[in-house]
Length: 83
Image (cartoon, rainbow, N blue to C red; front, top):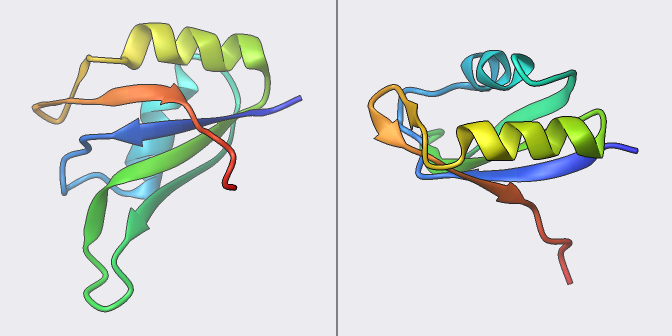
């Protein structure tokens, strides 16, 4: 079963492809989506990455949380379901 991760404090230069590449080191990425403002198309500074298994997601969280990506410390944790 796949696990969705929240990725915050992203640099503005990150796109879906570069985000996916950063997470591929820890397993199979099902999807990687940087959230953008509808009006401007500019990144909102956060994203969601779906990993193919819970173990891969845990590895990615452990290795990438508070790590640097393009010069910024990012936050990675398990995404909460919308209520």
